[in-house]
Image 1 (spheres, rainbow, N blue to C red):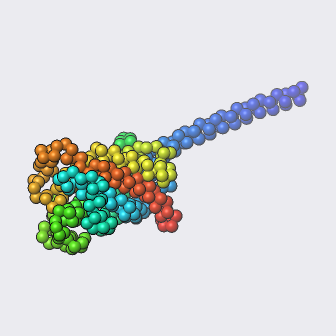
Image 2: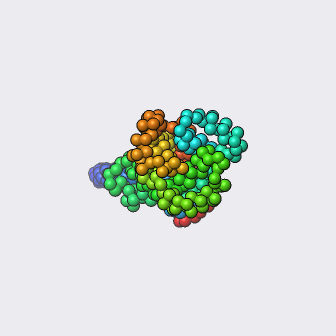
Length: 339
């Protein structure tokens, strides 16, 4: 009898222990699942803003350096396309991309395709640095310390951060840079002989005769152009799932797609900006007047002058910079220890 009672008690104890243990394990599992979902949610919220975590700069200075290096390398690769685009936009007669290239090489040799590069190159580093640095800064303002969306913007966070980045870029770098570039290219082809002997002579002459304010001619259309373009590019790029932009080639293709969309949407603004910053900018009272005169004399096609080289240029630019930025950040995180 005693043995039977002992066995019964042992069986009951074992059953209670098993039930209690099962409850504990179940509780742990539920807690683990909840924590996992929370981590995925936070990661998703934070990783949306920019590159994957391992490609995000671990220090604000790294965003500036990575952006600057990416911009400098990119402009050296793509400048002949930018040159062709600007020439087509400034010309009041139809001229093909091949026509621009053959005329330039015939008159000035192959290096003529790089006339005006210095103005772009001197500004390329600070422009891209401000762009990516501002994007990371604004992105950080839109989420809290846990990576949660502060303002309920959802996928629009990328567009908002890009809008802020583009505005800063336009005010501090793009407007004076574009004015100098357009005037140098315009001078080469529409004055015989060219008046400016190079970048520094051209800048000194423009500042001396026209003042610093002249470098900010076309500020409003430039802010409009750059802010909307960067909002579109960063917004679309970051809306593409991370699994489709893990590798440098995937990032480049994603960036090229985002850049192409921005060109097709805002090409007219770029044409107006170029006309207002050229040597004949005195003809226009403002962006609205410039638009009216282009439409009156050239029709809607006038607003799409240079769209082919610009589409090629921007797709290459955004693809290269988006891809290079992540790789430079990865390198800087290895050699520049900030934690």
